[in-house]
Image 1 (cartoon, protein in one colour):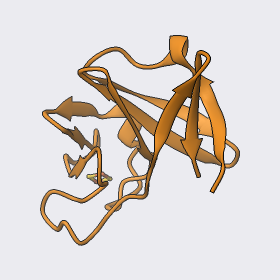
Image 2 (spheres, rainbow, N blue to C red):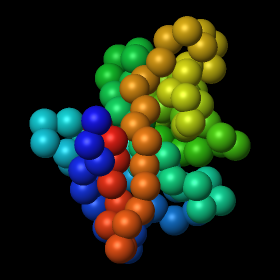
Image 3 (cartoon, rainbow, N blue to C red):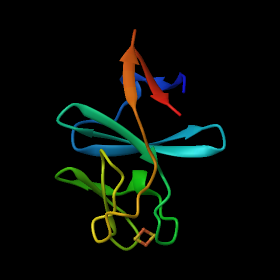
Length: 101
Ligand code: FES
């Protein structure tokens, strides 16, 4: 899969924060934990809550609607790790942030 530009480094969320980015017909949730940037689908498996509007707890993102939690690196759900939100590899290049999607 090719890496494609999602945003620029200057637009990334601050440490301990998540942010939503539109990408074609999708929305991607990008999170920053101690400078480690991760990207996952923005759609909660419960009722479609916007994960990028949630908050970060440790290495997890917590859905703002009813508190389901997902591992930022693997997308695995806290209570049922077999259920996963798709995650996308991220890299930065010349100030751009690219995801493999
Ligand atoms: S929609 Fe995410 S926890 Fe309910």
